[in-house]
Each structure stands twice: as structure tokens, then as C-alpha cells.
Image (cartoon, rainbow, N blue to C red; front, top):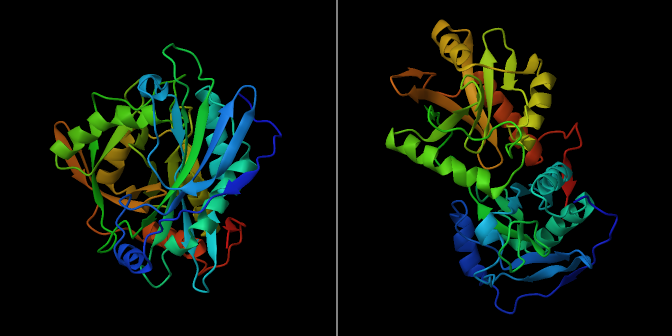
Length: 368
């Protein structure tokens, strides 16, 4: 379902039961990740006749769902993940929200959901952030504190039958988040899944839909059983080409300084952080390349020294160094400390997001 030029009008109904200032301060001091939520949320409804309507901010509260609500049976749901950052002077910014909005629209199209215009997506996020601006951690609270934003859309029509829903709900919620690595950035261990794949050609791999993450959980569970932090998936056809982790894109740094990431094939999610790193690495003088990388090239490259660093990237952790790759029958070490390219790229990206460096690409969007 394609987006229309429909202009959404948003209303605001403030909560009468705000979290007390002292309690909010205690939460922001140690927010963790995904544990606490702000005072408000934003919702909107879509139907074929009325289009998008009833859009606005209201008090954060549980959603009431009929047992026959379509999403509970057919998993017609998508989401995004992004952050709001408070800069040193107190202003609040988001990072490339229009790119998240465009991906949200592509995901909706793939899942036969109505597309929300990018402008409405950005406006909705802005409105919730402005309403709950006091929940954005200050620059001094935590070196990497932010307000994590979760826009999502799901089939809310009450019916049983396999067809696109005729009522859909869009919602945005927000959760204060601390540094992903509370005690400093440390390399993580990766389990290579040989039994499970994340996506197949013609499937939903390029969409940020709920089912992709549900399908990855058994492989993630397997990783934990093998004392690994995350799981890496290979392609579904040849079981040879490296694709991505359960929720993060992959990058390889070579001895000649070149930076390589698996090319987009329709089975890999096009990450916003992934795209930003391509440009930042080029800015820093590294040759960048998007191409297929086989698991043999990864193993042999680390063993020979041709691959010097491997890292993953995503909204939550920004950039995460990989320290160990394990599989059924073996493992290899990739270092116990983050490499220089990984460290430089991570710092460069954070400096832009928090307003400590020049935003040469115009990626920041001011909200407050």
C-alpha cells in the first residue's frame, strides 16, 4: 500500500499522572535499556476509507486487544529503532530520522501495511520527543545516554482470515537508555549458526518486521548455550555467504585499511548505522566496499592476518567489536581489545550524534 499526500493532524492530550521529578531522575541515573518508559506515547489509526486519522500524543498506557486481533495470529507488524540525543547546550536532536522513515515505509510495503508518509513519521517522533523532553538524559548523566525511540505499526483489525488487515495502528513509545557498554567497550563473542538462517531470497529479510526477530531467537538461544553473546547468519541458499547478526550489520577491516561490509541482497536489513559508517570510513581515508564475504574468507583472513578487525553496528550499541567467532567444531580469536579503525569510527559517529563534531553530512535533525 503506497503512501499518500495525506496531511496528518496531531493532537496532544497530556497525562494527569506524570512520573515524579525525583523518581525520573533516579531512573535517568541508571536507565539500562528498554526497562523504563516515558509518560506519553503517540498513536494513529488507519482504515481504507479514512486513511490515517485519530493521531496524537496521549498518556502511556496498555493497549487493549481483542483475542482475534490480526497481528496476534498473522504477525503483520513492523518497527523502527532510533534515538534522541541531548547536546551539551541542552538542545535535543535525532539522527537521520528521514532515513528511518523511508525504511519504515519500505517495510510497510513489503508487509502489505499502509505506508506512513516520511514527513508524518518524522513529525510523530518529534512530537513525542518534545512532549517528553525531560526524559532525554543530559550530556553529563551518561557519556552515551539517549532516549531510545520505538515507532511500530501492526494489524489491529479484529478478524480471522489470511489477508491484509483493514485496520492498522501506528504507535511511538520512548525509553531512556544508558551506555550499551556500561564498563567500556568490550569485544563480544559470536556463534555461527549452521542450522538456522535469518532470511531467504524473496522473503522479508530487507524489512524490519517482527517475524524476522522471532525467527532468530532460537539461534540466539543456541549462541547463549555455547557461551556466545550473539549469533551470525549465513545465506539461505549456499550456506556460504556472511549476512548479518540477529540484529546488527557486519563490517570487516583489512590489513590494507579497506573496510568491507556484505552487500545488500534483499536478505540483509539496510541499517541506518551501516550506511553512515560507509560514508564516515570514506571520509577518514579508508577504501570502502560492499560485496559478498564468504565464511571461509572470514576464517582464513583472520588466521592469515589479512582481516585485522571485525565489528558489528546498530542503533543500540552503535559499533560493537567482535572478539571471538565460534562454530560447531572450532573457533577463532579476533583480539581482546577494540581495533583502531573500529574505535575511530565509533568515536566519530558518537561525536556527530552528540554534537561534539561538525555534522558535515547534515545528518542531525533538531527537535528541541
